[in-house]
Amino acid sequence: MTLHPVVAAAARGDLPSWARASDKRVAHMGRVAELLDRWARAEGLDPRTRERQVALGFLHDAVKGMDADTLRDLVGPELADLPDPVLHGPGAAVLLRRDGVDDEALLLAVAYHTLGHPDLDAAGRSLYAADFLEPGRDLRNGWRSRLRQRMPHDRTAVVGEIVQARVLHLIEHRRPVRSETVRFWNVFAEGRSWARASEV
Image 1: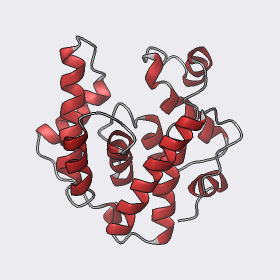
Image 2 (image 1 turned 180 degrees about the vertical axis):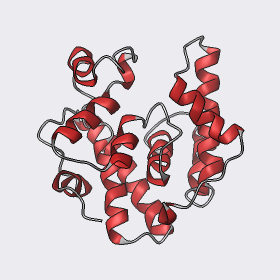
Image 3 (image 1 turned 180 degrees about the horizontal axis):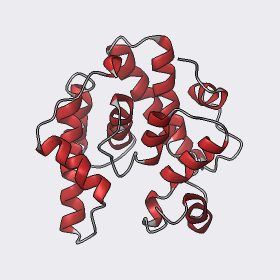
């Protein structure tokens, strides 16, 4: 697998020219990338697969600082109804595709790292978890620390717990739950098993 130059650069921490992220956001992205690297090493993934996974950490929030109207124009009518705080994932995926990135699993992971999606590959599921579990977040720290310790070898159960917590949070606050998130949850509710990252 040859990585697109933009993806290879991101794995080194070099963001695309179109990136819009504050210093605080870039620090978060670095912590996510660090977790993804640690988990990839724990799984014994080959260097190129590990590099791709680390790149996800730096790419997922690359346009978090872009204004919502610009992002809404980027993502088009299919996702234009997304709430402002989650537009950055699909927006970054559109810009990566425009740069010539054709790794569909990577683009899906970037686009749906906040919402979840039933078709996320192992790296995408790891990104979903790492974004939530990175140690810079100050939220239910004991629980999150325990989940981090179970990664990556108990990934299915850990990601399932995170999806459950997020869905319950949305329900408790009477917010809509996107169909992609519901279908992602159903993967766990139906007891499907997922392959290790090295088998995807």
